[in-house]
Length: 446
Image 1 (tube, rainbow, N blue to C red):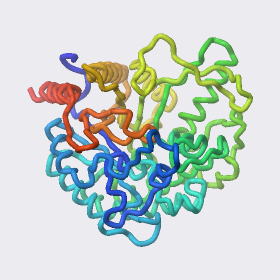
Image 2 (image 1 turned 60 degrees about the horizontal axis):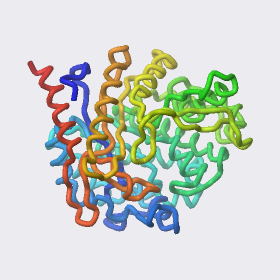
Image 3 (image 1 turned 90 degrees about the horizontal axis):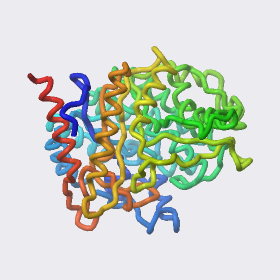
Image 4 (image 1 turned 135 degrees about the vertical axis):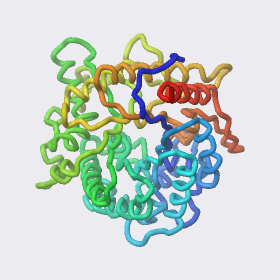
């Protein structure tokens, strides 16, 4: 571990989770079904038929998990609120027991000296809304804003900052374009209205939150895109992919316009989803911070399949996580520098809202995770030294959890979870991260 990282005083250290991945208790206290409850019931949808029905049982064990956070020394905890707990059908009457759970969670976090950073939507859309089109239906954006106001009215007196959406790119592509995540639709580019309606929901919710004096962020999985060669064809393919993965979700929020999607064969109105004035609704509320989830760069070549304007190709000569993702720490520095160069004064302060890796359970299973975190934090410190305004870092994840289509086979946690017994065991990376936080604080306490 480096003796110190050149990060500023007040830099916030955190860890992240998501509701469906850790809470369990899917049938308790009035919670309605989400798209993930329905998706996991499909034969073959999730590896080995795993579900999030119990997960880490955080719904009942959150005091134990907060004790781990306090011992770790976290400044903040990023979690998500399960919309189906608050409104079982996505609209209408509020489920008092669902709100009461997050009330207790927030109070317990604050008592432990940990700032809550809630995400309003982390992919668990109420199934009743999906039955009416889900994010392909414009009305879902307005229901999302109503839900945001309901939760903010209950928790906003103690929770100053909110994330509206988590990774709308992944939810759109995996959930609606490819069908490998809930809700399991496979519409290819015709899924893009779901992206627009999520962004519209963000803008409407951001206005609701700002009206209550609260700060607003949006988190997306962003990736530096690099062409596979110096050819014009590979460069054009990389530009098309960058527009889809990154700029589709940042340009409207930060610049008030969509990028050129013509290389994807997508019309300017995104198949009729974009109405006059929509980009103003998305852009005008403004962002108080941008959440960046970083895992790896993306290498792109000219297409071999006529159905796509790009091919995604392997990055050579780099290690990979247990998930098979390439490990390129400097990609984080390059991504942050690119954001600053691309958006200039329109770019708000950045928080790394996810970064971490899955590691195989083996004789010495945690050294790769420690090496991963150390290298990425070093890259982050370099970006800060180069002038990028980064305010905090939330590692993924506090706990091993239900890793979507992979079930319980990918372990990202600083804390090992035995899913048969629910026993929590801090890993070596937990102790490493705790010491890193302590060293950073001591540097400014002198």
